[in-house]
Image (cartoon, rainbow, N blue to C red; front, top):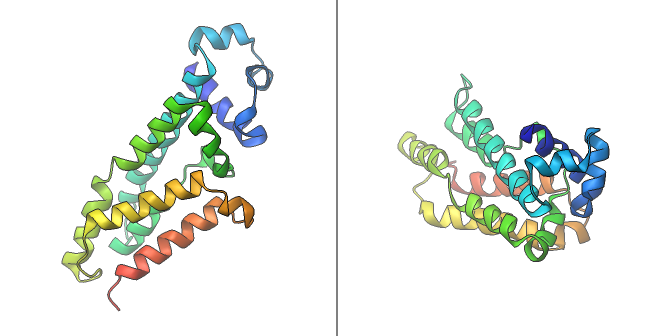
Length: 184
């Protein structure tokens, strides 16, 4: 039931943005708000659950990339850095900056999740260096640049102001970083 509610909330968020109401969610799910509140006590908790669900789906997608046969180390790295699960494709992530003030607990989880779970990426970077595909780099700096860029995508208004789609911006970031470390 919780997963159904969270997935529904992600869809309503995709349609209406962060200002959706619990009435919107109840209507979308075809259930009462009372039923929703028996599973998820408030909208703050719902947003935190949505963030965790999204990052869990990203991690699952990363594992699927790692298990795809025939992908080179570079292809795996590109896919992992740019992975976006089906459940969140089409979302306007540029609205997430509004969560920082209104839902600080959920925003804190976003920051924590961006900064953790780098083991696969780090192992691919090291593997690429060992294979001679990537030049030796300071992985900490690579991670900092990627995380800082994502936070800026979420917090800044530049993407929205310049009508740049989040997924396009993410792909360009991945290309810049991976092309920048690739051995020619």
